Image (cartoon, rainbow, N blue to C red; front, top):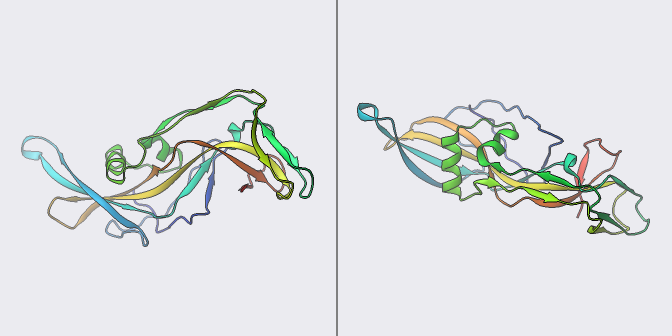
Length: 212
């Protein structure tokens, strides 16, 4: 499945309340996304006997990164803060878990349908995480984050998040330059971590911004 000519900006965040699918326009197989950087290649032999062929997979990386975060996995209920009010803290008042995801499932949870071979090669060549780590937390009441009084007005949450980059993997017959297929996938570039976000309109409106 070919995807669009689009490069993430570093400040882009992708909000997942559960699972959000993205629709992209198709591009010709030979077109490498502008701004992408070549990171390496790997040869793979496929088939058997007379049908055995060796293919070269070339991997290209979007140098910018994006972030996925999960408001439905918050460690606390939304806390309303008025800018200029008192400092406040977010505490572990809700227990929860976010499960680990292998690279294929992580990419597909964000709406991409790259094959497992292309994603496996991307992980090896680009040296990204093969699994998005999981995380669990208890409702201990302990302080998770301290927020300054000058923070923008809004509803504040602390949620798990994952950083990633987008990759293009081109397949061609070894020794040739004609691209047989191009597939996009997301490479995980950091373990799951907790992130403070806030909604300027109302709790649960999914109009979130990253604090700090």
